[in-house]
Length: 380
Image 1 (cartoon, helix red, strand yellow):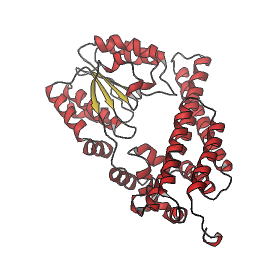
Image 2 (cartoon, rainbow, N blue to C red; image 1 turned 90 degrees about the vertical axis):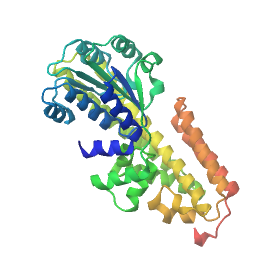
Image 3 (cartoon, rainbow, N blue to C red; image 1 turned 180 degrees about the horizontal axis):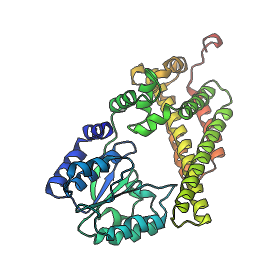
Image 4 (cartoon, rainbow, N blue to C red; image 1 turned 60 degrees about the horizontal axis):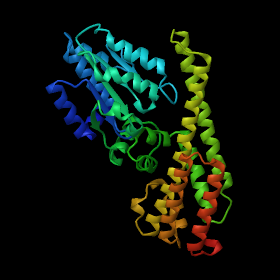
């Protein structure tokens, strides 16, 4: 068992107990692993699939070893991840639905894992429905989803649910320190707290891109609190999100074109559309992350202004938070958090990003100016 899988089993005891019981009783034909990103669903799915394949193989140790490899060379283990914002319909049909009709190449089981199952279009989900309803006895499907509400009810109802909880900050921090992925001291602690249990997000916050976004968020908050112009900061946030989207689009396009060259049916239009969706999705994710970090900053100001600095998520920024919290009414900081969250909801409704951020700047400034006890210029 790999270290990542051991971490997942240690921090998801309920999921581990449910899957252990399933292996003893005989696994069901379909499972839905549901829970937040970075909570260990992928690692547990790989372990569970390996155990299913090992249990039906003559050489269980070898089958388990190959199934645990990434990517896995086991011929009866199919792992499908979206190349862009969505799974390609034909890929779901070819690699899961049609492939599930073939008997195992070795052993007695076949396992199909669909990562980010919510990224399947309705057409793909409807096509998969018959496979879920009448699967061959040797087929087991595992769907992973961070947004199970986006799945059709007919899909979710035909899968046995396995719930995953967010990882505790201590577990995220320990994993970051063990992996040596960058950062040290309080920066790692801050990334763990800000990630809300999402290990992938915590790792992102320790990259150049994550640090850049945090700096832009701090600039936004600082400008608001000092009656300055926050526009340069939120425009920088937009640019960072745009650059991330362009990078994601390029990566998705390259992957899809490689698959086309390898024989997968792909039209130029399909490739272009899928790549653009991947770019838009990544852009939206980064902008939303910026707003989440902004809400966390004002949440920390509430904690510091209330004398609870030890509860701050931004543990590596207390030297900035303390002077900003000096003289700030905690209720104003709490109201600022609500305004940021309201802007996140507005962006979900496709409101203009520029207008929404400009309005947020104005509303935050008015809220803070109405409640802040002004300090002497020399103490700012």
